Image (cartoon, rainbow, N blue to C red; front, side, top):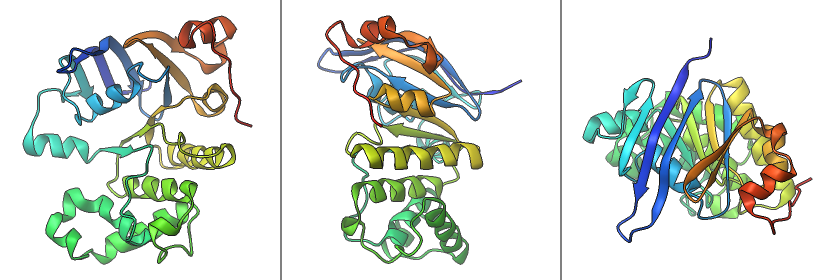
Length: 256
């Protein structure tokens, strides 16, 4: 029987300006899943991911990662949990003037420390692992290229390799293909699928396009106005569910 790696219960987030971004969201994620979160912009998707890794503090509710409550921890215990939860952002967050290899190696920051990272002091073991991950995401031969000389899709693949340097048990991907064109979107999603299937890393990913969701997700949850309104198979999202999630006027756009 599959084990839960993440348990979210009655999660609430109210921002200081009064915006109620999450309203009692509850769901579980099992080890090895590729769970996708869908919903309109402003539905709470990004807030959800940021509450899970504590970039934002939840207002109330519970988040358990590997059975450990993480909504209240601080300091070193929080850093220990964050080292097990990788994060990929929409805009890559790379160091533009640094090489692919250096950007991937910065993923070791939690164990290397700031001083060694600033001066580029990395172990041979870390360099070997970075090389393997660069190959995993299909960027062999680009090790010495500057990040800002790469295409958007290549930069996102560097970001995936960087996140994997910390040996995460789970990867959070916040709209990882929103800045990319359709063909590149599939390329990045295929590498995330590879990470999920070959390395066994659980993935929790925010996406806009249902065509991508149907192709890559093992399960879907949908948010609307901060509430969870759908949980199930991507194949079961018919036209009625689509309009419930995205609104009566919405038209589905397909990425081929």
